[in-house]
Length: 285
Image (cartoon, rainbow, N blue to C red; front, side, top):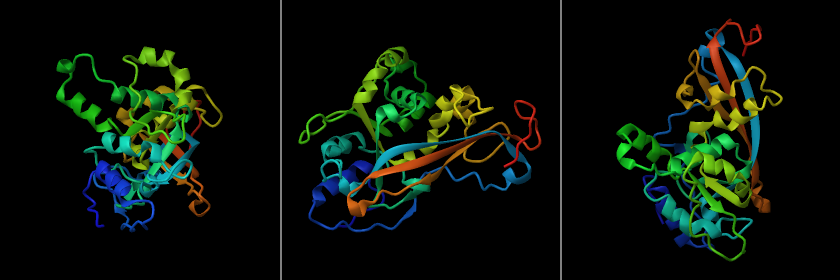
C-alpha cells in the first residue's frame, strides 16, 4: 500500500485501521512538515549580542507516545478505542507534524496521549476556547473565524474509557463559557487528550504560564500574564518577544511494549542585551 504525503490525518488513520494488525507497516521518509512555521530559536545569532532573556523557564511533562500503526492495538500498547472517532475529528486537517517540525509521512507518525488534568490550565483553556462555538457566529469576523478554525481539532479531548473493549464515539464538548469550565475543572481528572507533537509548538508559552503565575521554583522574574499573550510569541527572537521550543523529548522503549515518555518545554521572554532585568540584575544567555 502506497500513501501520499498529501493525505489528511483522517485519511492516514483510515488507511492504518484498514491495514490490519498482522502486516508490517511500511516506513515513510522523514521530511519537514508542510506549513510548519516554527524553528528552534535558541541558536539564533541575534541572541549572542543583541538580545538577552528577561525570563527563562523550563518545565517537563509526561505523556504516552504512540504511532499511527498503534491504532489497531489495544490499551496499553495502542489507541484502538479511539481509532474510529479520530478518523472523524481529523477529517480534512493536515497532520500538524511530529517533533521538531519533522514528519515521518506514514505509519510512524507520532501521536501523544495525556491525562487532561496533567495539562496546565492555560493550555486547557486555550483548547476549550477553540472548540467552543461562538453564541452568534454572525458577529465573528473573518480573521477570528480563521483563527478558530486553525486551532479546532488540534487537541482531541475524550472521556477516559471505562471498559476495556468499548469504543469511544465522541469528543468532550466544552462548557459554553469559560466561567462554567472553571467550575467543572474536577471533571478533567476523568478525561484524556490526544494530539500530534506538532500541535504543541504554537502554544508553548502556555505550558509554563501557570508555573510563572504561581511563582514556582525556577520562574523568578517571569510574568505569567505576558506568557499567556501569544501575540508576542514568534518563531524568531525580537526585543519584547517570547520564544520557545521543545528542547528535549525522550523515546519510549517500544521493543518492550512501553509508550511512556517525557518532553521539556523551554520558554524565554526577551529584551535588548544589557537591559536591566526585573530586580535590577542583568542576564546573559
